[in-house]
Image (tube, each protein chain N blue to C red):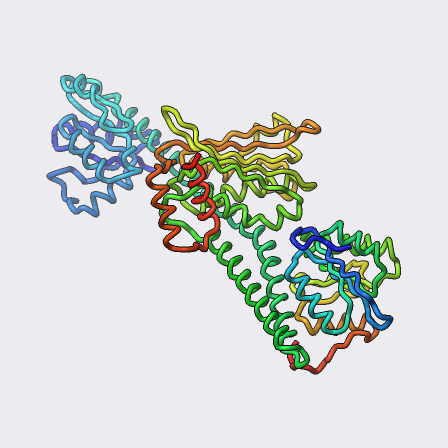
Length: 148
Length: 419
């Protein structure tokens, strides 16, 4: 299944040929450019990445494919519906690992169904936390470049 | 009661004396009114300095003058400017001059008392003083009302900007994070040069996006102190651009029906605020998606009109509710509404010589709301074909313009001409 890249509500499902060690990550966001940059970033660390842009499609995507990690933005899906999507994913797959990405200035949600709240403070932070959630299956060079 | 402050403008010494005797005498000595005369007699008084005269006018409750001095007193008071032009006057005169004076109306509120009815003078003075006090109160209330209105207008703008800031911050954070991700990738030692270049090119594009967003925001918030000629379709496009994300997320399709390239002489910021408020209302009315139709068209006739329609297929309102739209503090949004948005919208439209009509229906299957705004000349101006051609050629010689709305409007102008 291949989504239409020009459709803002498209799903880009790479349905990659996943090796046993290669973790599959789904990134859900409403911003195509941000999704693309995160996809590149996670792929560079050895993940197989699917991106879902748009609320309903994102949920469908999460239902269709069991994955290692789902990354959802708290304020990016339908602007305020990130937490709602977390709950839906959780209700369908109780064991699914979910990372909720939040803007630090928005504060940490007091009640979230995500496994971990990841602050959007830079690529390194996201990679490190995603790597921890995936039990170190990502190839994250913690000391490279020295910046966050 | 404090003493009534009377500004006496009397050259006729005899009449002046009679008046003083009456007002200072026993006849009104026991009343609450005690007359106090300013020595501000034109031409003969000691307080001839302009400052003293002005101070006397400002402090006075009423003016007492004679038939001979009416013109001078009126000119004096008139020159003092608003609000003292509404100073009531009592004209003390001879019986012969009274009839002639009654035909004139030099003062806002005035009474003529002749010498043979001099006993009426204290009553006339007190009545004038009461009138003056009432006028003062009225003027003060009007000033307060005007200040409150202006404050509300400012507050509403802040609310609009605040609301927009949320989505703007979101819009800016996304490209910034993308830039950070891409630069991080480009710096990795293992990445190939071609991939690194791709990342940098993408990052540049994202930074461009941030610039566009901040420009949009600034142009929305910029205070316009002077009126200028504004292409209506351009202002509509600016408003739509600000709501792009919200409209997309709400699943709202925007249908543009631009059938005019009319201009409005308006304050740009205020016009943008009008459209922003209308679009915000439409988005709120369509939480489950729908259609937003924006039409700009001309109605030719004896008085050409520029009509702007903003219609949505949202939840709509009952006729009774729709009637109240635009009233101060009326809201259909419960605690989340301020009741200012549509009131401000109406105020701003009327300020620019326009009129707004609201029609709505909440009937299942055909619900929606239509805002129809009509502007007429001289506020609205319709461009001639010559002007359109000149604008188009200017755009062509300049190459590209950074304002897509203008290009779109110019393209539309060409289409109109072809049609």
